[in-house]
Image (cartoon, rainbow, N blue to C red):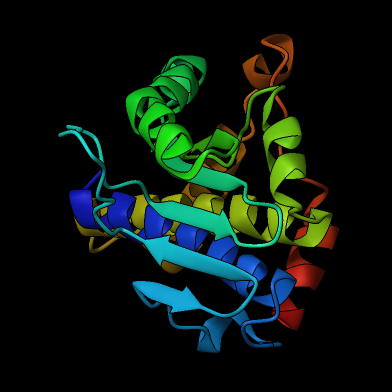
Length: 216
Protein backbone atom coordinates (compact mmCIF):
# COMPACT_ATOMS: atom_id res chain seq x y z
CA UNK A 1 0.00 0.00 0.00
CA UNK A 2 1.20 3.51 -0.76
CA UNK A 3 2.09 5.75 2.13
CA UNK A 4 -0.56 8.35 1.25
CA UNK A 5 -3.24 5.62 1.29
CA UNK A 6 -2.22 4.60 4.81
CA UNK A 7 -2.14 8.23 5.92
CA UNK A 8 -5.63 8.90 4.57
CA UNK A 9 -7.16 5.92 6.37
CA UNK A 10 -5.29 6.73 9.57
CA UNK A 11 -6.40 10.38 9.46
CA UNK A 12 -10.03 9.45 8.82
CA UNK A 13 -10.05 7.34 11.99
CA UNK A 14 -8.44 10.20 13.92
CA UNK A 15 -11.02 12.62 12.51
CA UNK A 16 -13.90 10.34 13.52
CA UNK A 17 -12.59 10.06 17.08
CA UNK A 18 -11.93 13.81 17.27
CA UNK A 19 -15.48 14.61 16.20
CA UNK A 20 -16.87 12.20 18.78
CA UNK A 21 -14.75 13.76 21.54
CA UNK A 22 -15.71 17.32 20.55
CA UNK A 23 -19.39 16.38 20.71
CA UNK A 24 -18.95 14.46 23.96
CA UNK A 25 -17.37 17.41 25.77
CA UNK A 26 -19.57 20.07 24.22
CA UNK A 27 -16.85 21.92 22.33
CA UNK A 28 -19.08 22.13 19.29
CA UNK A 29 -21.84 20.11 17.72
CA UNK A 30 -21.38 18.68 14.23
CA UNK A 31 -23.96 16.58 12.45
CA UNK A 32 -21.83 15.69 9.41
CA UNK A 33 -18.43 14.07 9.65
CA UNK A 34 -17.47 15.26 6.17
CA UNK A 35 -17.55 18.90 7.31
CA UNK A 36 -15.52 18.34 10.47
CA UNK A 37 -11.99 19.78 10.46
CA UNK A 38 -9.42 18.64 13.00
CA UNK A 39 -7.57 21.42 14.84
CA UNK A 40 -4.31 20.87 16.71
CA UNK A 41 -5.78 22.13 19.99
CA UNK A 42 -9.40 22.67 21.02
CA UNK A 43 -10.41 23.55 24.55
CA UNK A 44 -13.25 24.63 26.80
CA UNK A 45 -13.95 24.64 30.54
CA UNK A 46 -14.34 20.84 30.59
CA UNK A 47 -11.54 19.53 28.41
CA UNK A 48 -8.41 20.16 26.35
CA UNK A 49 -7.98 18.00 23.24
CA UNK A 50 -4.66 17.96 21.37
CA UNK A 51 -4.04 16.22 18.04
CA UNK A 52 -0.58 15.36 16.69
CA UNK A 53 0.99 17.83 19.12
CA UNK A 54 4.20 17.44 21.13
CA UNK A 55 3.44 17.09 24.84
CA UNK A 56 5.90 18.84 27.14
CA UNK A 57 7.13 17.03 30.25
CA UNK A 58 9.69 17.70 32.98
CA UNK A 59 12.10 15.19 31.44
CA UNK A 60 12.87 14.42 27.81
CA UNK A 61 10.50 11.77 26.47
CA UNK A 62 11.25 10.32 23.04
CA UNK A 63 7.68 9.40 22.16
CA UNK A 64 5.78 12.56 23.07
CA UNK A 65 3.50 13.15 20.08
CA UNK A 66 0.47 10.82 20.22
CA UNK A 67 -2.38 11.06 17.74
CA UNK A 68 -4.80 12.43 20.36
CA UNK A 69 -4.42 13.55 23.98
CA UNK A 70 -7.55 14.30 26.02
CA UNK A 71 -7.22 16.09 29.36
CA UNK A 72 -10.51 15.99 31.25
CA UNK A 73 -10.48 19.06 33.51
CA UNK A 74 -13.41 17.82 35.59
CA UNK A 75 -12.28 14.27 36.39
CA UNK A 76 -8.58 15.08 36.04
CA UNK A 77 -8.12 12.00 33.84
CA UNK A 78 -5.86 12.08 30.78
CA UNK A 79 -6.36 9.82 27.75
CA UNK A 80 -3.60 9.10 25.23
CA UNK A 81 -5.08 7.71 22.01
CA UNK A 82 -2.95 6.15 19.28
CA UNK A 83 -4.37 4.98 15.94
CA UNK A 84 -2.84 2.25 13.79
CA UNK A 85 -3.72 0.59 10.47
CA UNK A 86 -1.84 -2.63 9.75
CA UNK A 87 -2.01 -6.12 8.22
CA UNK A 88 -3.89 -9.04 9.79
CA UNK A 89 -0.72 -10.89 10.79
CA UNK A 90 0.51 -7.93 12.83
CA UNK A 91 -2.79 -6.75 14.30
CA UNK A 92 -2.29 -7.89 17.90
CA UNK A 93 1.42 -7.01 17.83
CA UNK A 94 0.78 -3.45 16.66
CA UNK A 95 -2.01 -3.05 19.21
CA UNK A 96 0.40 -3.96 22.03
CA UNK A 97 3.16 -1.77 20.56
CA UNK A 98 0.84 1.24 20.35
CA UNK A 99 -0.21 0.76 23.96
CA UNK A 100 3.35 0.41 25.29
CA UNK A 101 4.85 3.16 23.12
CA UNK A 102 3.58 5.91 25.41
CA UNK A 103 4.12 4.25 28.80
CA UNK A 104 6.86 6.72 29.76
CA UNK A 105 4.82 9.71 28.62
CA UNK A 106 1.83 8.43 30.58
CA UNK A 107 3.95 8.01 33.72
CA UNK A 108 5.35 11.54 33.43
CA UNK A 109 1.94 13.11 32.85
CA UNK A 110 0.56 11.20 35.81
CA UNK A 111 3.31 12.54 38.07
CA UNK A 112 3.06 16.09 36.74
CA UNK A 113 -0.72 16.38 37.02
CA UNK A 114 -1.24 13.85 39.84
CA UNK A 115 -3.92 12.10 37.85
CA UNK A 116 -4.86 8.84 36.16
CA UNK A 117 -3.51 8.43 32.63
CA UNK A 118 -4.75 5.79 30.19
CA UNK A 119 -3.12 4.78 26.91
CA UNK A 120 -5.77 3.55 24.49
CA UNK A 121 -4.83 2.01 21.11
CA UNK A 122 -7.30 2.10 18.23
CA UNK A 123 -5.88 -0.42 15.76
CA UNK A 124 -7.46 -2.24 12.84
CA UNK A 125 -6.35 -3.97 9.67
CA UNK A 126 -6.55 -2.61 6.14
CA UNK A 127 -9.76 -4.63 5.83
CA UNK A 128 -11.35 -3.06 8.93
CA UNK A 129 -10.81 -6.15 11.10
CA UNK A 130 -10.21 -5.52 14.80
CA UNK A 131 -9.00 -7.62 17.74
CA UNK A 132 -11.19 -8.97 20.53
CA UNK A 133 -9.91 -6.17 22.78
CA UNK A 134 -10.95 -3.36 20.42
CA UNK A 135 -14.49 -2.94 21.73
CA UNK A 136 -13.19 -2.64 25.27
CA UNK A 137 -10.79 0.13 24.28
CA UNK A 138 -13.51 2.04 22.44
CA UNK A 139 -15.83 1.61 25.42
CA UNK A 140 -13.26 3.44 27.54
CA UNK A 141 -13.48 6.34 25.09
CA UNK A 142 -17.26 6.30 24.95
CA UNK A 143 -17.32 5.50 21.22
CA UNK A 144 -20.77 4.36 20.16
CA UNK A 145 -21.55 1.61 17.65
CA UNK A 146 -22.17 4.01 14.77
CA UNK A 147 -18.77 5.70 14.98
CA UNK A 148 -17.12 2.29 15.40
CA UNK A 149 -18.81 0.89 12.27
CA UNK A 150 -18.06 4.05 10.30
CA UNK A 151 -14.35 3.87 11.13
CA UNK A 152 -14.15 0.23 10.02
CA UNK A 153 -16.17 0.98 6.89
CA UNK A 154 -13.95 3.93 5.97
CA UNK A 155 -10.74 1.92 6.34
CA UNK A 156 -12.15 -0.97 4.28
CA UNK A 157 -13.49 1.36 1.58
CA UNK A 158 -10.13 3.12 1.32
CA UNK A 159 -8.38 -0.21 0.89
CA UNK A 160 -10.84 -1.41 -1.76
CA UNK A 161 -10.61 1.89 -3.65
CA UNK A 162 -6.82 1.68 -3.66
CA UNK A 163 -6.84 -1.96 -4.79
CA UNK A 164 -9.38 -1.20 -7.54
CA UNK A 165 -7.27 1.67 -8.87
CA UNK A 166 -4.20 -0.56 -8.91
CA UNK A 167 -6.14 -3.26 -10.76
CA UNK A 168 -7.38 -0.82 -13.41
CA UNK A 169 -3.89 0.60 -13.90
CA UNK A 170 -2.46 -2.86 -14.47
CA UNK A 171 -5.16 -3.67 -17.07
CA UNK A 172 -6.20 -0.36 -18.70
CA UNK A 173 -7.87 -2.06 -21.68
CA UNK A 174 -9.86 -4.55 -19.63
CA UNK A 175 -13.60 -4.65 -20.57
CA UNK A 176 -15.91 -2.97 -18.06
CA UNK A 177 -17.66 -6.21 -17.09
CA UNK A 178 -14.37 -7.94 -16.41
CA UNK A 179 -13.25 -4.92 -14.38
CA UNK A 180 -16.37 -5.22 -12.20
CA UNK A 181 -15.80 -8.94 -11.70
CA UNK A 182 -12.24 -8.26 -10.62
CA UNK A 183 -13.40 -5.60 -8.14
CA UNK A 184 -15.97 -8.05 -6.74
CA UNK A 185 -13.22 -10.61 -6.31
CA UNK A 186 -11.16 -8.03 -4.45
CA UNK A 187 -14.12 -7.34 -2.17
CA UNK A 188 -14.48 -11.03 -1.34
CA UNK A 189 -10.76 -11.23 -0.65
CA UNK A 190 -11.09 -8.76 2.21
CA UNK A 191 -13.72 -10.83 4.02
CA UNK A 192 -11.41 -13.76 4.68
CA UNK A 193 -12.60 -16.64 6.89
CA UNK A 194 -9.29 -16.81 8.79
CA UNK A 195 -10.26 -13.60 10.57
CA UNK A 196 -13.08 -15.39 12.40
CA UNK A 197 -10.88 -18.42 13.06
CA UNK A 198 -8.33 -16.14 14.75
CA UNK A 199 -10.97 -14.77 17.10
CA UNK A 200 -10.99 -11.35 15.42
CA UNK A 201 -13.97 -9.07 15.00
CA UNK A 202 -15.14 -7.90 11.58
CA UNK A 203 -17.36 -4.96 10.76
CA UNK A 204 -21.16 -5.16 10.91
CA UNK A 205 -23.43 -6.36 8.11
CA UNK A 206 -23.02 -4.57 4.78
CA UNK A 207 -26.50 -3.08 4.88
CA UNK A 208 -25.96 -1.40 8.23
CA UNK A 209 -22.63 0.07 7.20
CA UNK A 210 -23.90 1.45 3.89
CA UNK A 211 -26.99 2.91 5.56
CA UNK A 212 -24.82 4.57 8.19
CA UNK A 213 -22.44 5.94 5.56
CA UNK A 214 -25.31 7.69 3.77
CA UNK A 215 -26.32 9.45 6.97
CA UNK A 216 -22.84 10.78 7.80
